[in-house]
Amino acid sequence: MSRLEKTTIANEKTSRFFVRLRRIPGEHWYLANGNEKNVNPKNKIKVPDSIKAQDFLVDEISFFNKLVWYHFTCGDLEGWLPKRNIRKTFRRLDVAPIKQATQSDIDNQCTAILMLLESSGAMVEPAALKAEVEKWHGSAGTLMELSDLIISKTHSIRDLNGVNFRKLDKQLLRRRPILVRVAGMDNLKSSLILLTGFNRKTYYYNDPWTGKLESISQQHLRKHWTRGNLEAISY
Image 1: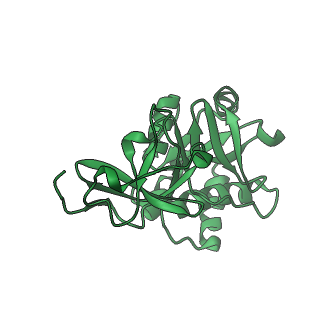
Image 2 (image 1 turned 135 degrees about the horizontal axis):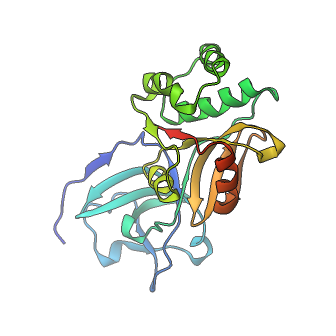
Image 3 (image 1 turned 90 degrees about the vertical axis):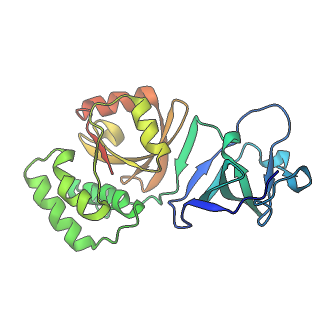
């Protein structure tokens, strides 16, 4: 195979995310660091059976040898996986959950929005954010009325109000978490959560109320999202 210079298509600071291996015949393999410029059979290392079903944390995406590759870590292993061997029905973004400071609606909203903004790499001053959210909350605003705030920190806005789940999945595959208004979740009349991934028809989200990564079926998410007027935004 021809030796090609590596061309990075996403820098090392790309937002990290988790992937899983496809269920394919034959052995899964990866390349150790340094072997990615000249792929040949002797460089291929078998993925141990014991971790084949685990989540692989990706921190860089590159293109070489006419393929897209993901640089991963999984336990003590690290190397490069070919994108074509990665499942398209699973993705989970590496966004740390944050627990809201109090049970107030303002703290719920501030925490969810903070996680969204920080996932983009933006620097956020909590007091300034709270002032903005209080102003927005006081006007009983819709999520799209947060546009100025979101654009000022991330330089973009994505209106996902009322879209289908395929479009939510597509946004998550673009490594963008999604702010969703729900109702009836955690026995709350209304709250904000941050969608961070999916596994077929299961969704992962950071819940400010619990401060944890949670999961929910597509059916139940649809019910709570519908009660929240199908509002959702991203960047």
